[in-house]
Amino acid sequence: MKKQIWIWLLILGTMVCFLTSLTSQIQQFAKITNLLAKEDARELLRQQEVSAELYGTFCSYEKDSEYSRYDYLLGYLLTEQEGQRELEDYLELLRQYQSSQIQELSGMERAVWQDLKYFPVPLSQKDSSMVTSFENSWMFDRSFGGNRGHEGTDIMASFNERGHYPVVSITDGVVEKVGWLKLGGYRIGIRAPGGGYFYYAHLSDYAREFQEGDEIKAGELLGFMGDSGYGEEEGTVGKFAVHLHLGIYVNDSAGAELSVNPYWVLKWLEEKRLNYQFSSNSFVGKI
Image 1 (cartoon, rainbow, N blue to C red):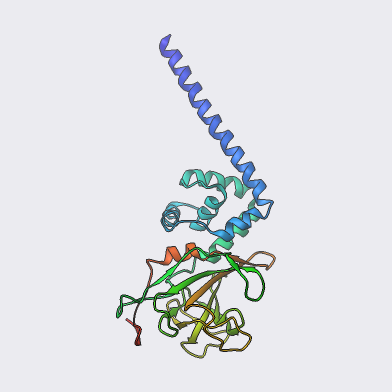
Image 2 (cartoon, one colour; image 1 turned 45 degrees about the vertical axis):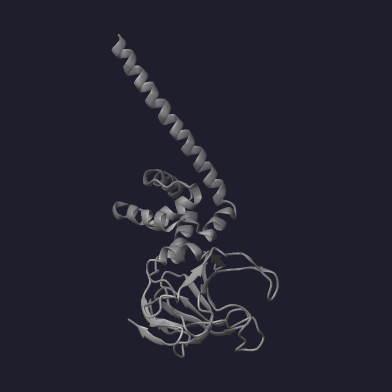
């Protein structure tokens, strides 16, 4: 008799745990469904707040799964869940009931992340003092040209002199825009194969005479870090410290362009740097 009671208690306990888990999942799913109907989902996507370590975990999840790292990343941004099983439960529900929205948002994640190969500023093998730094400055207030949010991350130079730090493409792609902009100075914009647009601004000069439509390889030298921009006249310099402004943009299904936060992308790429020979006195080239 006691054995039967214990069996029933075990069954009851299992059912309670299952119902509790199911209730939590239903509540979370309802929350996500409501989120997808608003602009909040896009705002989470624009922020891209994921550590390099956690993104590496999502990369490992996809090895034996029908879901990609971009699906897991999207699921995490929407739910804050990190476990593979929990994320897949939600992704399966969303795939069934919010298929078009999930496909679009997952595609936008792919456009941001799938083509990344190298950090945009190589390491110097000639001068260890030639380092860079960056912080999460996305959407900080800017006032030149009118009040606006900062659509990018600034990579700052320890040696504040234009023309010394090489800037390389972080992806393969095609040159879409090149030349002078009042805000960005000498800039180059590259459209990667997955659809992401990568914007490099405030260059001191270009590595060669780029033309729109030129094919670019990841790691290719684009130019040198500078301080150009913030002037009506082409060639204006000296309005701020030497740095590289990196912007990342994706398009939604309607063709509208969205700025996303490059900070987390750069954190992921920090360990993926090329080595160049450059110093405060000279530039030799890639090792």
